[in-house]
Length: 172
Image (cartoon, rainbow, N blue to C red):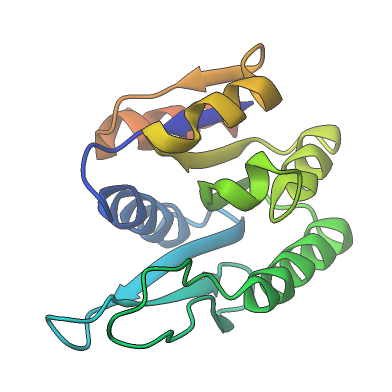
């Protein structure tokens, strides 16, 4: 009920999950969670990071501008927590067929971010799809190694897993 992908390049997981979410939505699957949208604005500055809530389309900015020469963490934790609250409320009000979350990152490894939402979804019987980077894999394994299933970072394989979790034959 908990599938994860580990895409090789930065941003690949975001794009993969967004494509899978689009295909599932087009097929009539009720989704919860978020996908990350990265917007390049300037070649010498980091991209803008937004989360799009799949249940209602709302957008939350989760990056902050720290200046051209800054090397600190750009995550806007307040923006992330707003998105977490929106997803948690929607999950409780009307559990979806599947929950997609952009990533298990540092916040989740430390017990914050979407970590409680993952547990909430699983306790409601809602399958979860998430991206996990190599950098955060240890924290993810401590949280979910015994129940998590590693998926190929291939759109068709991920889509087939999602459909199997919600009881739909991928070939039919």
